[in-house]
Length: 287
Ligand code: ZN
Image (cartoon, rainbow, N blue to C red):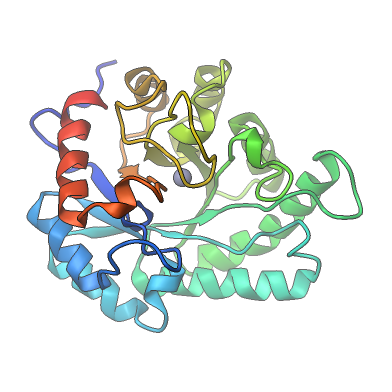
């Protein structure tokens, strides 16, 4: 199978607005969604992914703005944590997750990302917490399906297992998908979280086209200083970007490639226009 050629066509390129920093208080240039949309459209990005905090009550309006500029809304970040110390009250968690689904539907976002949360306080290890995740996702999947929203479980780097994501591998994410057995439930594959995994290719084959709902790009800096806010731009780290994309596309994925870079001390300090220009260049040459 041949990989897509991005050197002459980068319409698969998607901005995750986290890469401009303003999804976190006190960071980034603070551009309004409309300004980000225009900057992406001007550079030939094909789509965009927002965070809930940027959207507020403007979901319908922002979705229309994006489509008018020629961009699709590839996704929305993200559900609240479904398990862990911030997710004890299951009813409250599911209510907030359903509000996130409603927002994705109003934006006409194709996918809502799920970051599952850490270890339940009354347990040790990840097994019990993953069971809670599966039960809560099973509750959300039909609600999302009725609203035409796909749910993407995003396994995070094991670094985060304690407090952000007891789900750390594509393998465990697929186990949940198979247990829940909903057609609108799949996985998001993020280079930052999976680059180290020697079983990745086999697991992506197992996932197949029907279960891969997203592909996220950045790089793992060899001497990273902060596992949350020091992600690298594609090409600056040690991830084998071409090999990972070969696996993702070999499994049948042909969707958006979403650049998602949390970088408090580097990229978030730069002019957003410059950051977007570098992204386009790196995407066309190195990804
Ligand atoms: Zn991601």
